[in-house]
Amino acid sequence: MKLDGRHTLVIGLGKSGVAAAALLRSRGAAVITADDQARADRKVVPEALSGVDLVVVSPGVPLSLPIFGEARRRGIELVGEVELASRFIEEPIVGITGTNGKSTTTALCGHLLSTAGLRVFVGGNLGNALSNRVLAGGKLDATVCELSSYQLESIVTLRCAAATVLNVTPDHLDRYDSLDSYAAAKERIFLNQRAGDAAVLNARDARVAAMRTREGVKRVMFDPRTALGDLKLSLRAATLRGAHNAENSSAACLLARHLGVTDLQRGLDTYPGLPHRLEPVRVIDGVEWINDSKATNVDSVEKSLSAFESGVIIIMGGRGKGAPYTALKPLLQAKAKAILTIGEDAEKIAAELGPVQPCGTLPNAVSKAREIARKGDVVLLSPACASYDQFRNFEDRGDQFKALVRGLR
Figure 1: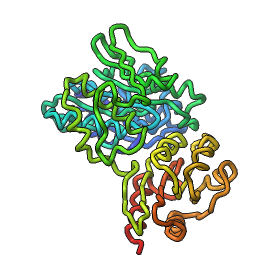
Figure 2: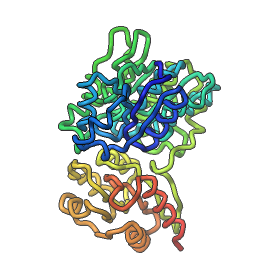
Figure 3: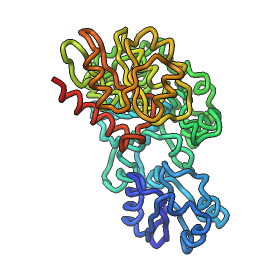
């Protein structure tokens, strides 16, 4: 992709947008930037696109904004940040998507590859923008990229030598008009695969198992019920807790195996885990405190709860995503000792799951949990909601939880 001398507009100034702008400038393009709100008004669209021949969009910016429709009408090239970066990456790209488990699977796959001696970049939606791989330069053996549905909406030529869709459950229904349209965005990860590439599919998820792949692509199915049985591996890492992590591990191992890695067990045994995903924080008086702030939807909480037997004091709440909480009721009745609520969706959680103990804020919830927890219990922050009502992001929420727990006496 020739960028020298091109006039580009980057919309969205998060990590991806900033990295994309740096990549464009490094390749000789003239760059102007804008946040999505500043360019959403129809009145400013003509001015914003004046002289522009390439628009790069960050994943958090809806493609339904008027400026993108006008760009298409004018014949201006429109790409997402991951699409832009992928055009400068020579090594095989491993792509990972799904409603839940993307980050763990991405980090684990990268760890399996690097433990086997491969030179690897790990990033994408995980936090390190794909453009940073290009900016870093050098020769690598593989790039492992977490891809959200938002990022996949705007791909054109991005090709994954190995790709997986882990699962599709209700999420982001504030952006998609149906679960089918959300699943269709996920399916795009297989769009540009070629003969000999691998598509790793969850056999137990009907939507995923039915996804279309191109002729000649190797379809590899995995079944969470048998976990890693077909690979004759065991999960010994303390950071891979719960049945859902057996599923994530199975996908990661199959992806790594496609890239030629055979010693998978060593990587599994040494995987350090990611923060905010069933992250052990502390044990106080026999009570285990777990930070699962990344559980921002109902399905993720269901998977996390399944990792525990009983005596769970769960902290839930935040900014809801539109999905009902009722699916959690049987599991909570079986495993939860108490439900402590915080944030904007507390009343809805109470209406659908009650009885609950309303706490309002995270400090109040931690104090209440400390008061009622007894030896053998687990205090689990697993909100089932986004964090933006009271926190900067889920990381901020998890970090504040860890600080509060470490401060307990």
